Image (cartoon, rainbow, N blue to C red; front, side, top):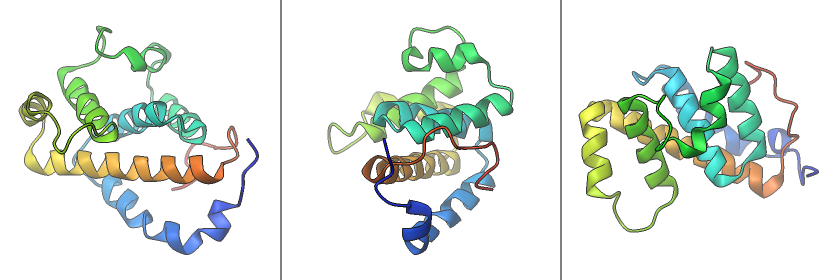
Length: 153
């Protein structure tokens, strides 16, 4: 897809409102590897090619295995995700695929077993951030395949 507009140029002021959130999340108590895994999964759900390219590269550069990336869409059946990762993935999916007014109790209770209140808030903010970027890229297009690891630091 050809970009409809140069988001980095035209949206410079608007995007600047999201950058502090990313900076905050980079300092969060949530492991960066886990946040990027969440960013990747949410981008799969939303079909954001630019973010899939970006986060797969960031994850691989940080040591993530190809196997875990290849089967992330089927994380419930795959044996190589931790309970903490599973709780985060379920939480991220529930927030991305809003089906009712609340995240189901069982997903919340499992997340509470794995995350402190502050971590759960940070995880939620991470899901909000990636959903925002996904929607911007899907609306206006992005030059898929051009991302280089660390490009937006």
